[in-house]
Image (cartoon, rainbow, N blue to C red; front, side):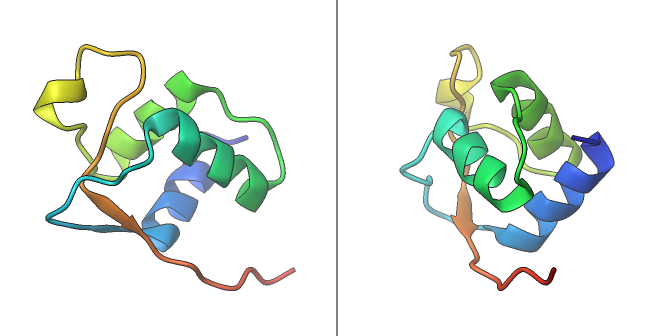
Length: 79
């Protein structure tokens, strides 16, 4: 998947939150695979989250799966 399209999807479906999302980057990337209809690697997803303006929590920066202060916004996809 093109990184720019993934960043657009993240901006569309994520909004900043004061709470840490209970789903890690791996779980979020699985959700975005369903939305996008194609495979996304965890590293590709984490890079796109950064590019979209979402920093991982300080506690999760050194781990394989990052956590983010985000809320998932469900929006209908248009064909």
